[in-house]
Length: 66
Image (cartoon, rainbow, N blue to C red; front, side):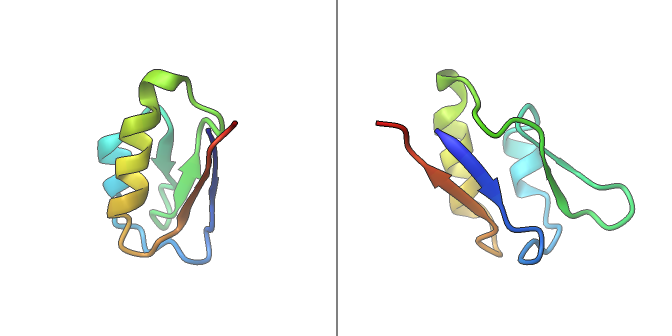
């Protein structure tokens, strides 16, 4: 799995950080998402998928490795 985030779309809701703090963080000054791990280990994939699905701004994009 490879993750990318669109900071311009991010509204700072923080749902991704609550669900997957190993993968996502937020900037202190404005709450915009910070990607900590663009290729997380397999045990985190389900959580990352959930984080992407609940993002109100659809700022998280996932691509699955074959």
